[in-house]
Each structure stands twice: as structure tokens, then as C-alpha cells.
Amino acid sequence: MILMIINVSKDDDGVSLEFRVSAYANVIVIDSVSIKQPQESQNADQGPDFDYVFLEIRGIKPTITDFLAHYMSNKDSREYLHWLKDVKSFVEK
Image (cartoon, rainbow, N blue to C red; front, top):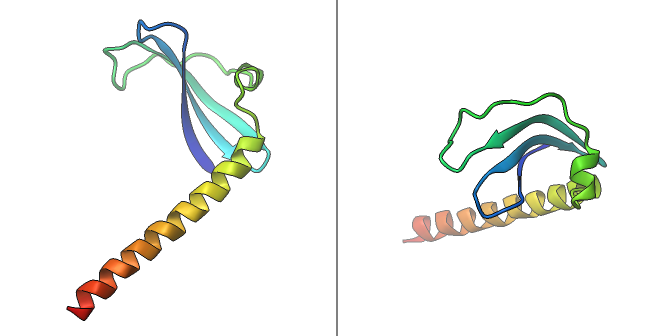
């Protein structure tokens, strides 16, 4: 599972919809939808349950979860390799 926050805005006024979603293999579950004002940080009003079709129309599709899972897996491996190299250079000094 990958937790994501997707912000959708229409104009440059800073108001946006914030979708908190859980992405599983080939499915995205919308956990909550909030309206974010530009000056807000954490206290947005949570709306009712929302249908995934809204995100799918905007190009956020379940297939993105495969890409994200692969990307995150590779990212973790790359970061771990970099960390190991740093540890090796520290130990060798």
C-alpha cells in the first residue's frame, strides 16, 4: 500500500481539493477529500465520501500504483546503496 496526497486546483487563487488516498495494486481508495484554502495548514473541512471517478477523469488511474510501487522500491534501494557507500567510506577512513 502507498499513501498519497493529491492536490487538485483550478485557478491560481490557491484553493484546492486535497485527496488522501491509499493505493493498492490496481486500485486507489479515496480515504478523504478536503477543501484547502491558501492560508490553511492542517484544519481543512473533511467532505463526504468521494467516488474515484473524479480522480480517474483527471488522469489519476489505478495503473499509477504499479509505477509508484516500482519507483518507491527502486528509490529505497538506491538510497540504501548510497547510505552503504557513506558507511563504507566512514569505516575506511
